[in-house]
Length: 193
Image (cartoon, rainbow, N blue to C red; front, side):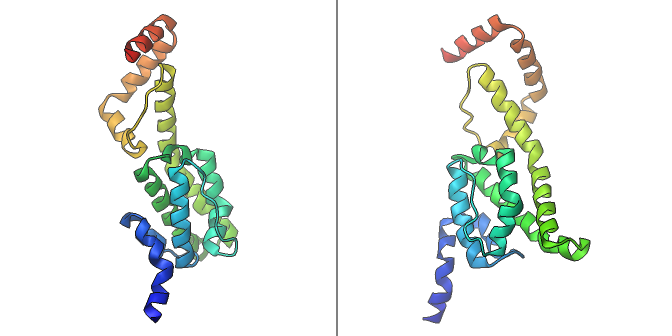
């Protein structure tokens, strides 16, 4: 009976992909049971294209999330790129957990206060995602400018695909098309038919 009571708060893990279990359970910040609840709700929010929210204002993990990572995810627009893309939502959360785990390290090795360590971890998280977000924004802007395209591919895989497809040539062609409205109109018409 006692084991069942201990396992009950971990039951929501069953709804998460196994790739999120390690970061959720083995993290130096906060209570593992609260992180389980956070993971389930944050993943659900990201898959809806919404910004995850701190669940428990008294929990150290949620405080760390609220004090640094929440704003960073919003500023980068990560939620919009995770909408209906489970691999991307999962990668955002795995990266978040990895950087949250660095908070204790920053406090110990760099003598940061808790608040400084939380901000340092959030800045590192933002740096890790910034290039990827800029690439995603370029891709969407280019395809939107020629009539749009439903990019069903996971954004996390997009960067590699674009490197193989000659992305620099596509960007140069886009610049030329942008300056030739008649060509843009022709391409848009051809694309629809």
